[in-house]
Image (tube, rainbow, N blue to C red):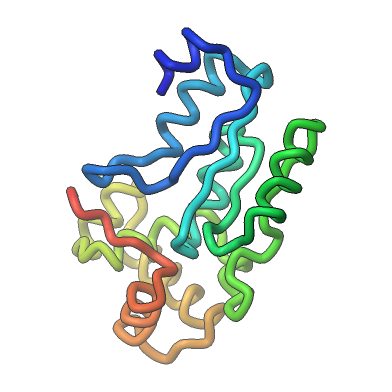
Length: 169
């Protein structure tokens, strides 16, 4: 995609977050934004309500994130808004589960690692924290999301598409 943007200098690029081979469209988008800045607007599209996509898209300096289940008229409106210098991100990425918005970035990362079946010791090491601190984070996550067990929470998150486990750990 970077090569195409270098050659054609488009005003706007529509991208898919989930690309073939489980690669991240957001990381490809970030390369374009890092090189071209605001000269090229990028609107990412997804059909999954993955809770980390919103923060990843904002960190990558994308101009918007939308869901595929919109009609063409709405899509054209969003494109027009982005071309007019507006940023377009859903304020509430999980309409029925707004409590996910209360999680910190580290808590989201822990939840993603847990859904990806990482051992707790491995998670603690990756985050440079003790297993006791990790246990506290997990308790906070359970309290914030109002779940009584981590296993029920993980099944809920994966089953409803809120977290996509890492396939290539």
